[in-house]
Image (cartoon, rainbow, N blue to C red; front, side, top):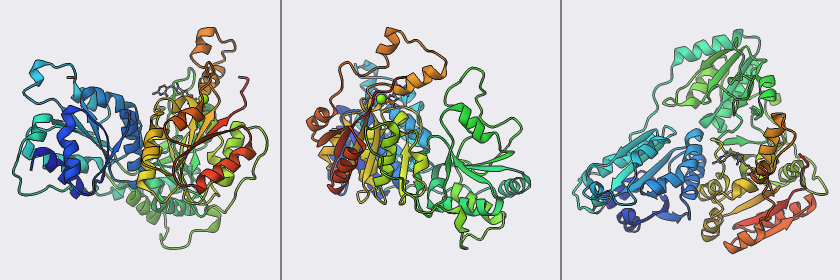
Length: 521
Ligand SMILES: Cc1ncc(C[n+]2csc(CCOP(=O)(O)OP(=O)(O)O)c2C)c(N)n1
Ligand SMILES: [Mg+2]
């Protein structure tokens, strides 16, 4: 067995079955090993940002890592923007990066780069492998590290991948959470119960059913509000679940929402801050007086911590939650007429099926979507956790591969779509059940909104040139069809409803261009 085979065997034994890859000569032994190990599936992304975004989507849905295989420093560099989103989403993710042969590095060949420096910008764990025999332990260590919700990057010199090695045992990941800190959770319970108004901000794994269930019990016992960050990585949402309120994107409404809390308990979420620094507005959204209490670190199980908090405030987890705490079924009515951002959200909410996975990178078009969805049939909702655009289409790939029984709907802003548009080709090649709704407002609309927010009323030609996307207009139907994805353009809510229903009834990828009425600001 060579080093590459040892590495892939270790990954497979740990349950990794997918490899999102874009490779070159330095990864070829690992590529060959993907064929020598049965049950491994290689997925080609035509840009590394597609591979890393797909691995992010997979990891968010499954809560366990997929791996990427990327080519040297430049390949990793191309993948970093979406690794940034994965880092913010606390996604378990393992990167394998091929490196030049150790003896060749000194010659400084053209593709040589400082891979470790690049990896360091996003990785919670990283290592450059030092011998073929160590590859099993290194890989198991990488997988273990990723399970805490971080990116683990293993850099593997090409000669160590090729070299034969004898290893008697395949290493297995040794993952376990650190024990929760009961005393600090008891203190949090005491503060919550004595405070006039408490908020519980939950994130990460706490946004899945078990965490939401504990959150609902805590709300029932303490009358606290339960909130999440503006860009949650993954939340289960819909009828019968706790309606977790989303902290707004813009600072004024966010401050308005958060200023009412005397106490804020953080469970799997960081203290909320504004997305950008706005002159005259503090970075931190909580008031100075508000007491902050964190009940779990990234090394601890936030769900266990929440359940302990629920018990401490007097809840019995297997008792029935009062019905006013959980959401009742509610769907908005279908809108009519020319599509606007609001009508896109209403139409989607009126139609989306149970178990849908909504990958949201709709930006200004999807601003009004989340509040419509608390009473819809249960579904999953994923957002651009690190704000680095170009995440939606790749993320949809990973989500579809992770959960092939669930339809994926990607609400996708047009400017952001163009960053990783090659994702459509992978969606077609792998016949993934993804419906992409392109929000074609033909501009970087959010930048116009930000300019208006800053009080700028007249916009010069250079500024407009960097914000408008209408010259030439992008033909989404042709782009999609050119990559093997059937596509159609719609102008009205009625047409969207018809085409969305059709796309959902036909497994496989579809793209619908939503021609949005041009906004005047
Ligand atoms: C990698 C990266 N580059 C640039 C930006 C800055 N940026 C934020 S939103 C945006 C444009 C968004 O336009 P679009 O995707 O069409 O959404 P819209 O605002 O029109 O709803 C840009 C360029 C970013 N967040 N991430
Ligand atoms: Mg746009």
